Length: 305
Ligand SMILES: [Zn+2]
Image 1: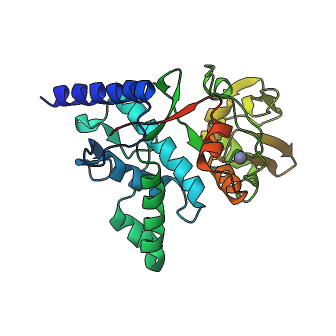
Image 2: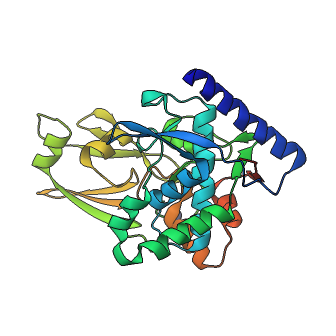
Image 3: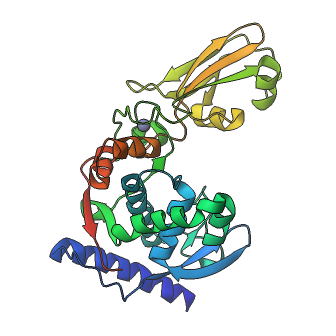
């Protein structure tokens, strides 16, 4: 029965997207809410809620609520597109849920009660601002070639976003590297990490003394593809994970104590740069302009949900 419900949901979303492309519906019917089942990983339980209510909790969790309204709108469109694509792909989540709040397999979600706890006195004003951004873009999604895009996003690119091919090896026409000078207000635009030789060996599980450490970068953007240590090749993403670094865009310097890493950006670097979105919004760019900057050649459509 539950499997049938999921198939009906997938069919419904596919149909609404096709309809949106054909008749370009601009006035979604607010009376017909699409309900989704969300898995809450900490509580190990599933809640059912309207998609648009879920998007409010996702935007509240994934982007600082004090960001500009146009940046929050761009985030709302990303979150909605990302979620619907996960449902259409029939991604498997625990307890047969449609989506999850686990950031490693889906998007974060912050319910109102948790938001209240985090924001104290300013809670209502900020929550209302997030809700306004979501309602203003109700039903809007990004498509490429008539299909929902993989609307990836990250905190801070550090000057240039990453091509999907750099990070995952597959070229995606709308996930290209674009220059971004709008995320300089992020503390991770440029950051420095010092790691002693001992800690480096421990964290990378190396027994021997390190006599060579070299980065193999992608060109032209410059994020690392591999790190060579004593002739052994390590993937940049595994080094980032093991050393708990903000990104894979580095410059290394060494001295007798250890290694000094200059990192640029925070996150994988693919798709929308969230701090860049805020910088663009401060420069009076609309959410449509923000999305078109980071997702090459996409169209924005409003679907009935
Ligand atoms: Zn950026």
